[in-house]
Image (tube, rainbow over all chains, first blue to last red; front, side, top):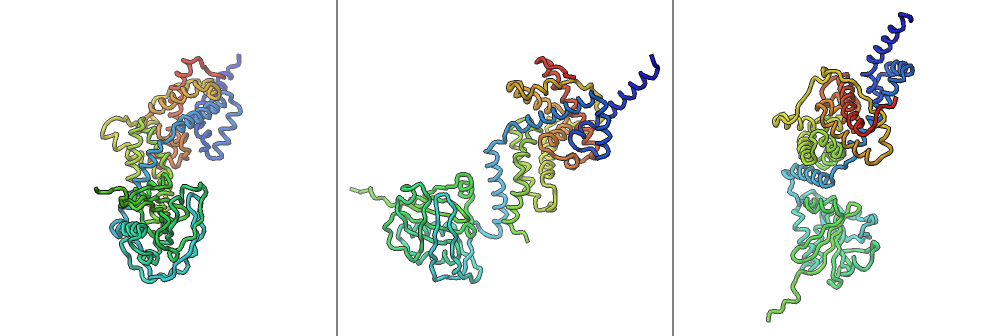
Length: 264
Length: 187
């Protein structure tokens, strides 16, 4: 028996032992190019080390599959989104109240627009005629909704909405049939114009507002983001909010006034 | 100038997009879904507070993992729930057990695979935090060693060593599971 053989074996075992700590880095692609070449050269001569590399690769995959098996709960995403929204909302609060909207100059011309509702993107809005004067602001949200409700009930005329239109908040408002949403599953095209508003004979009112000009309350924002639709009742009037293409569609139905109460 | 609207959009695009990765990492740190959700919410609040103070060219993914880890460490140090082995490189050497056949079987038997995955997650949970973080961020989240070094605040060489030791420990833990089910080493 040659006395050199055990020494050769020891040298190889030592080399294998020295290489082991680098095998993980090799599998992760984290060795420097020259290091990687040197390690791979040794691997070709050592089936044991090669097998260890294959094992590390499989272990890495097993850890990845196990770690990504369970999905994060949807409720957490909703909660985190609300948390972020509230945080940025709070940052905006000191400089401007939540429902402030910019007010431009008054515009006499009403705009005829085609809007699509019910889920498809709206057509472009030729509202180029709006002339913006100074940047004063008026209180918006509640005031805007109250005005729309009053208009829907016939308590105020379309002229009273001109300031909202001039501010770029209200793009258009139109009387529509009560069955506007119910009688067709297909998105509808409505030619809408405040100039065309007559007495309320059709039951519902559709208003199109610019999302860029109105800061919605968080609850509505969240609901729209989650469901695409938000339903509310304001002074007995059913209000349906939906969004598409940067527009907020507000459909008002019913008048909230009792018709059956007959105090005898 | 960045408006507040822009800041919100930037935050959502740079930080919020990592919410599910934050949760996965938090789950591996805490070992509990409820605790992981709390940790992610706390970390998100911290991120919201500090977002404006961070350079725009920051590695946001590494940044959010750093926040999650720091928050976890500060919380658990107070409660004493977690044992932190900072000097993982000095852990005693352990023999590397063979688990090749068990890993080979993963592609076949569904029940074995699910059981094995549970065992992998359990084994991960037994690792010291710094090793667990290194291997979770590397194998589950796909971070590079340099990013992990930034999160662990240690040299890249230490990350390499921690991942090596972590995998040795995982193999030891998983070999026991494999042996019980009749899987040995395939040479």
